[in-house]
Amino acid sequence: MDEKKDIETREDLEHMLAMFYKKAFEDDLISRFFIEVVPLNLEQHLPVITDFWESVLLNAKGYRKNVMDIHAHIHSISPIKKVHLDRWLKLFTGTVDELFEGSKATLAKQRAISIATLMDIKLNHSDQIKKL
Image (cartoon, rainbow, N blue to C red; front, side, top):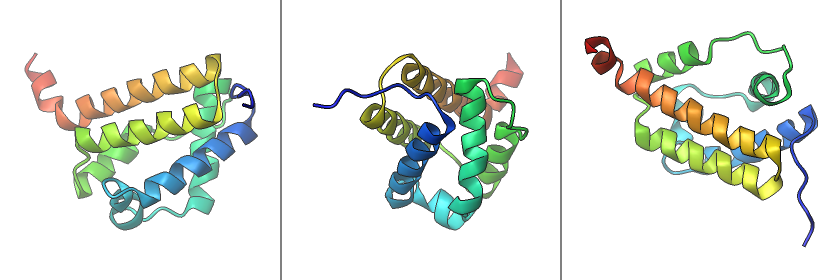
């Protein structure tokens, strides 16, 4: 069995994200967010989302958008529920595991868990937080 390498370059991220989005576009639970709710042009989106993950994992400085604002807009059109975030997380971490192993791969999965958790809190529980 071939030994997997760690996430080291932008090209690694591009490959991983292309595989992830292929799965997401085919998934019966979350594909509609990418196809119907806010149709995603992958040719345009992949460089942007690669910038995001490159900033998270490889300390690059190219990403300038607010991820939460983008997803809050999507949520206003069609609610993003915990079940959707859980599926995103399963597909994302599964893709990381298929391709990579090492400290950056582990960090990618940890950050994905944090992102999904934070999105669920901000999108679905912000009214409860305000009461605290």
